[in-house]
Amino acid sequence: MSVILKHEHYLEVSGEKIFYQHLIPQASETKKPTILFLHDAIGSVSQWRGFPDQLVKRLGYPAIVYDRYGYGRSQASSQKRDKNYLHQEALERLPAFLEALGLEEIILFGHSDGGSIAIIFAGQVPRNIHLHGVITEAAHVFVEEITLAGIREIVELAKQSDFLKKLAKFHGDKTDYLFKAWHKTWLSSEFRNWNIEDYLPQITCPALMIQGEDDEYGTQKQVDAIVSQVQGPRQKLMIPGCAHVPHYQAEEEVLKAVGAFLLWRDKILKP
Image (cartoon, rainbow, N blue to C red; front, top):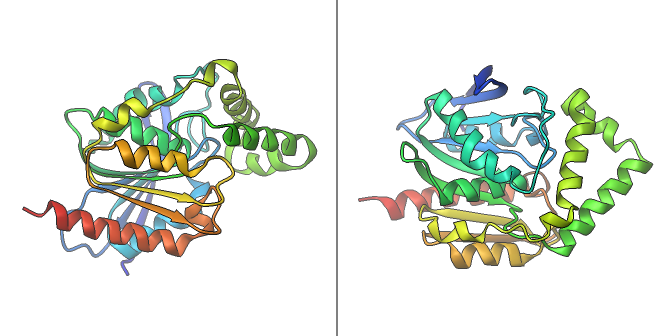
């Protein structure tokens, strides 16, 4: 297991101030692509907890963990959100962030909204980027009723508990805007036909799709749709007794699965 160096930075990208962590394994025999972590709909760098650190220590890959615009320690946003907000993140903001970092060799690891962003990006990879692989947890490619029911439940929970107060520990005064932008977008009538399956046949890099069998925001139909339509080598992992956050609720299993996937990726791509 490697010792890691952790550096925290702010980077201005297209006029937006973005916070990120750079995790660097001290002992790495070969140059490896950087794993870029994409958080969920109301997530942040801090809400990954120690998972990225553990993955970097165990596997020896460098990583970037960042707060998207409007989240966590990045600049606040007052931008009106529409049904294409995930496309904007994947096709505009993420490429601009990578360019500002000077990063070209990457593996994407996306959770929930971050998984959907990873899928869109992987289906339309910029020419200057070498995407070595994509890993998703609880990604959505279309809207299901279970997703909407789960969001409605969280909205009610926020009214009756200190949920938003706890969320504010990560997002500060951005919390109210961020929470409303998320649930109002997903619960809007125009979002019902949101679908990103068109991007799946364009994905040719190795892919690992992870989902908890008890995910309260999506069914196995999401994973099956992805696995059946991507064109590159792929693996699927459904985790029993696990809900929407596999890297927290089944951390050890996810760490092992990612390690095995990356070894498999190296093997099948070896010249």
